[in-house]
Image (cartoon, rainbow, N blue to C red; front, side, top):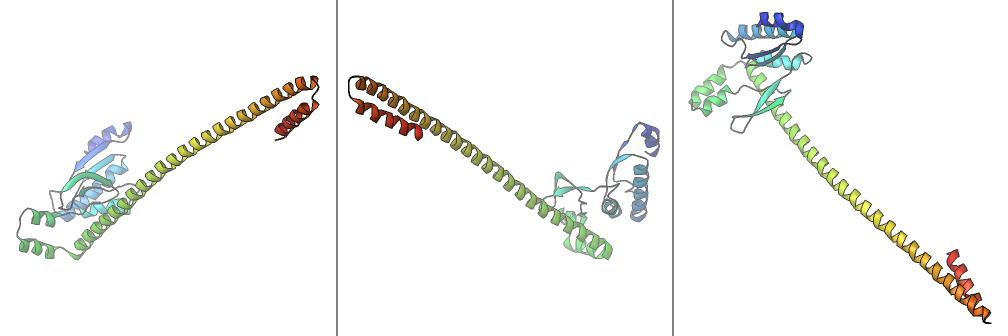
Length: 219
């Protein structure tokens, strides 16, 4: 792997896939060697995707975020993988839970738990707590996003309703203006008729019609 990376690195980042790197040896030494290998590959410009149960490697995504990033597969309530990948979250190893699920005697599993070092137990507890906290935060974010989408939908409905109201108001104003112009035309016709009547000798009709026209135009 190291030689392949060296041969191709001049062309750009080399994608390197590592599954359970150095898992088949002493756990402490294997974890140390795995960390050193990952650091070396990253420094040589490789883009590494790796799987591991080594707690040492999980910590890299917390203490050295500039170069490493954690990801884990979400488990369901029964501890089975959902194959839903979550970034920035290291998964806790569930060997003891899996052992119970596959039928190992409780006494055996409990004995194994007592053999774990305090540091191992604390790290597992921390990882589990972080996982639960992130899941709760994600649920809140999802709820907030749902609320935002509902508010956006309601806002769009209100905007459409306002647009309808404005169009209706414009229509009413237009119809009102048309009615007013019709009244002006009718008054002018009345004046014309009054002029004809005045020519026949009745000036009062002309005066009345003229006053009505002036009143309409003033309004």
